[in-house]
Image (tube, rainbow, N blue to C red):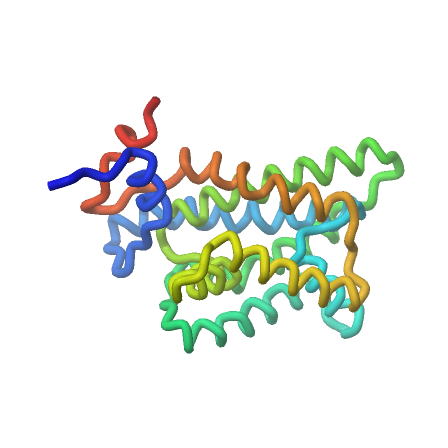
Length: 227
């Protein structure tokens, strides 16, 4: 029987989802899921506070928040719930990680924004922005690597991709669409938006390759990743 190339095997293992985790699996995975969602929310709060441009999805969230009485984080949660509705025709299944991500990340971002204040110096704002991007990527590596299900936006992307479309095309199309909508609504588009677009993929892959937990039947993660 042919074996998968180590890099391909690792890539599949990194994205594997445990459909019915037992208690032992939950004890192993839930702490990573929780820390990952906490990191996502804090990182998003950093980028919003820096006021140098945010991710395409957060441009949309900001734009919607500016036309409603709702907080930024509440909009993040409500948009996540709306995106989950789009999973239905795609046949995507919810996981524990999906639910936790949807209901917590926005409010963690709100709390971070409340605690922080916009720095007076440009250098400090850049440090906040760049640190936020790294913290978001770290959170992605933890929460996706926990194998308990993707967040609503990631699940939408993979669900459409599963219909036979190239992943890069789906991701680019979705992010351009939400970016344009958010920009028209007054979301914060800037240098940070460009940096996020180019940096989050490589950084997310870097952390995911090192933080993912394998599932039964997958190739040995240490063997697959060790070089």
